[in-house]
Amino acid sequence: MKVFVTGAAGFIGSHVVDAFLADGHEVMGYDNFVTGRLEFLKSARGSERFTLIEADLEDRAKLNAAVEGRDLVIHLAANADVRFGTLHPRKDLEQNTICTWNVLEAMRLANVNRIAFSSTGSVYGEPSMFPTPEDAPFPVQTSLYGASKLAAEGLICAYAEGYGIEAHIFRFVSLLGARYTHGHVVDFYRQLRDHPDRLHVLGNGKQRKSYLHVSDCVRAMRMALEKARGKINIFNLGTDESCGVNDSIGWICSSLGVSPAITYGGGERGWIGDSPLIFLDCAKIRSLGWTPELSIRESVELTVRYLQGSGHVTA
Ligand SMILES: NC(=O)c1ccc[n+]([C@@H]2O[C@H](COP(=O)([O-])OP(=O)(O)OC[C@H]3O[C@@H](n4cnc5c(N)ncnc54)[C@H](O)[C@@H]3O)[C@@H](O)[C@H]2O)c1
Image 1: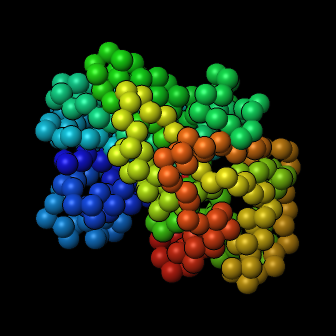
Image 2: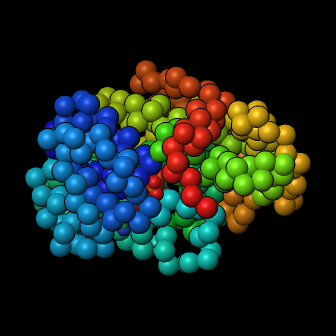
């Protein structure tokens, strides 16, 4: 299969590239390196079945040409940051919604009819049902990021209906693992590296989240792409656990061997759009035979170990 991966040099994208190459596929990566890193593609670039296009999804001519002849598009490129959304109100719309439309249009023009999309548990806003199933009541949006992803999901479904595209939409919880570059573990890691005696936490530390290791996530995506072959296939991807921010702090601190004084910003949310409880119902993906191999605690600890060894952690 000829697979096209947007955001190929990112945290998740580079693992997706490696997995599809390992399965024997031909993979073309597309990335503008705004947050992606060439070193994440070190192994992929050693394969003669991998090609890399350094370009922006806003460059529709380059995108259209690149998508030509592919069998499957895995669209991961996005502005993946939730927290700073209100500082740049156009960014999520442009990078997450309009760029997704650019990808869909490139597919329509080239007659490419399969897409996998990285959506997010943030589309549920602050839901009323826990664990939250894929068909939870239509959610009220609390972040520009979640809104832009839900809009992108809407476009993908409309293209699936209108142009016969098969769509797999994956709503990830927060992911952890090697090549992790953004999120609470690296935020806490940076603070504790700079001053091991103190840690400042946004919110009251009682927020509960669910996390998934990137290897479990990519395995779930591949299984769903193989086994679920309807027109529109929407899957939550997470573990059947949640953990408190304070639990996670305890695991990070014991991994690093530090006992900092902890201060809290206060309030139930760390920032606008931070949901105090994220816990997705993953029965649908589990019904295909998938189960995560790593617990949240193991994923946090592996991520800390990666950060300690990687040298990727900048200020
Ligand atoms: N990491 C998580 O916990 C998480 C959770 C839920 C959903 N997601 C989604 O998964 C996807 C991948 O996230 P990630 O954590 O790997 O983020 P990332 O920032 O590491 O990867 C995104 C990649 O896309 C590239 N990119 C961004 N805008 C681009 C553009 N306009 N043109 C070309 N390339 C562009 C970046 O350079 C980067 O390599 C995103 O869609 C994100 O919203 C991530």
